[in-house]
Length: 481
Ligand code: NAD
Image (tube, rainbow, N blue to C red; front, side):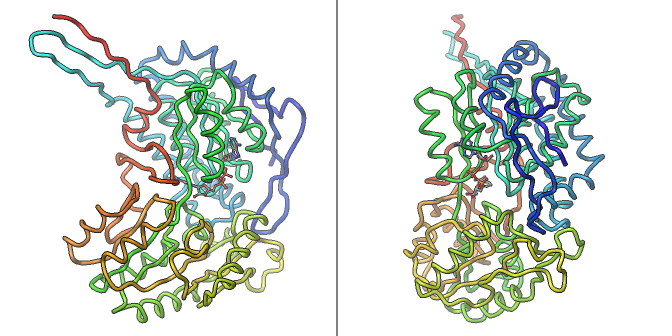
């Protein structure tokens, strides 16, 4: 596959002619290349986007919505091909790509194609004196930067509201997983977007990403990725007074009370621990279990985790594929070593592996699902984001203790609570320092809800009208009566 940039309606390589390797993590080998773009490409894309902004932002919401819907039609039509491309690029099981990633990418576009037609602004009446109304204006040219874990899913989650609100976009998918954004770019013209409205640049974060966020004509940056990258971007963007939305890392807790529905809590926790090889920002990496059921829950969890077969991601029966890259595999393995040094007991997994009997995959990046016991709250393993198929399990004795432990990290993205005591469930949810709390479920998503984290997990919210608020600037108009 040769990935190309989309600038001003045309596909092409990077200005400097440099390339990066496209790696299939299931085999650890290259299967193509992508442009290593830089400042010159950013300049071209931002210029094209600026030139067409007046036209695009003057289109009716209906007309913009129709373009976004037509792009969604393409995702629907080519869903199978996109799922295969996502799996090959990322290492995730094809079952996940075809039931979660790609359908959700289509839904993101459909949701904002519809939402923009229902987006109302406020008015404030001052009795007998004046009436105020709020205009919501698009910002201009905005940057959308997305990570590798849910490539097309998170890419569309940003570009859809940005475009729907009337902005022109320069988007940068992760260099680790650029394939599906490139495939999407092939349908942008056909969907009816004027040239320059939607540009996609590929390359390294520290090069093209950095040039993009620094560009003076970029009005806002919507970023999803690691907390350290988010902090760096904030330091660059804040002094320029650009709008900034940051969706960052997590170290989420799953809190399992003794009075839960045991089987449901167990199967959901297996999923929240290991789905997408644990590489979902919302995965529950710290499992806190009430002491009365601790042994039983731990043993059942270990038994289920040990039975998960790591396999060829493209095989329909595979539940667990490869982690995204060699570098990421090594980082996860390093964390497992740290856990051992900290005195953690590995209950299952703890090592790199490969699909059984399949030499073709011997160079791939696979890690056996890993559960670690015996570590305290303050250790690195329970404080740092690992972002792989590695979880810890700890007992708790009281509701207060569980909340304190859950809130003990610098992160605050999400948490899950399992209990059949309704009052307790609401009480605990309200006391958690997280942007999202699930009760008796995990990753149940309604696209209308505010999505994001607190503390070092981010600033701002995506989802629903929150994203349309982010991608517009309110102006109050006051009319004296
Ligand atoms: P990352 O921060 O390395 O990269 C994310 C994106 O930012 C990539 O496109 C990258 O090229 C770009 N980038 C890197 N350096 C940049 C710079 N200096 N300037 C501009 N852009 C730059 O993150 P990652 O490894 O791709 O993704 C994993 C992380 O993302 C995890 O921490 C995970 O928790 C987080 N994440 C968060 C959410 C959320 O919604 N909160 C969702 C998914 C992933």
